[in-house]
Image (cartoon, rainbow, N blue to C red; front, side, top):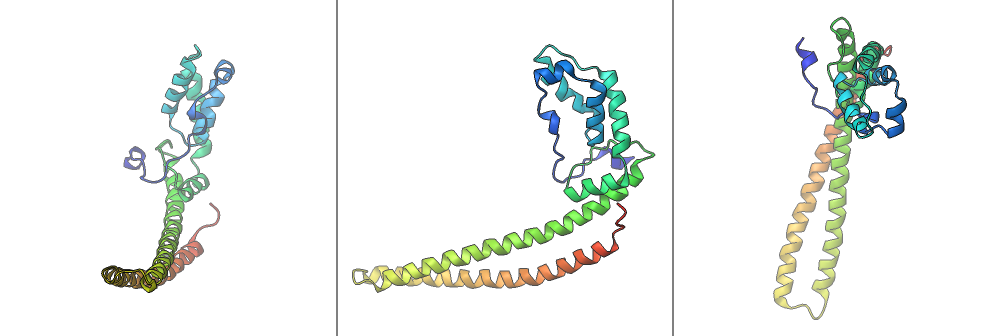
Length: 207
């Protein structure tokens, strides 16, 4: 199935224990349990490579067969519609770990959560742009105040005043552009917020 072969291009799923097992963890590891935990978190079976690399430094080799048994059992708990929804809403990767019989339900939940994630991300992006523009407008106002003070100073030359007037004109235009952009963004935000609310109402809250 094509969907199982493609990593969806969104924020990566944190790999937790894959960052590196300690010597003690390697020495006492129950590899079936390690595999189960990786599978239940939606990590691919290839994750054992990270464990192998970490444990090789301590003279320990993972038990691949035990790991695979545990991983398969963990995947069974992961590949549910509710877990798919959680993964999609969080913006996590789907690593294609679900077996064919379980994947349709998982992906149905995943895509529902993914759409919610994208709609919420749209609002966060707009809010961030509005906030950035407002900070820029405040900086412009402060610079304009400095320009006014320097222009009024008795020791400011005529040539310098001409430069300040030109700079103030540029800043004024930019201040207006940012204000107009924020007006547009606020209108856009209303549309996206309504879209999000409408979608939330259509969700099957059984996920």
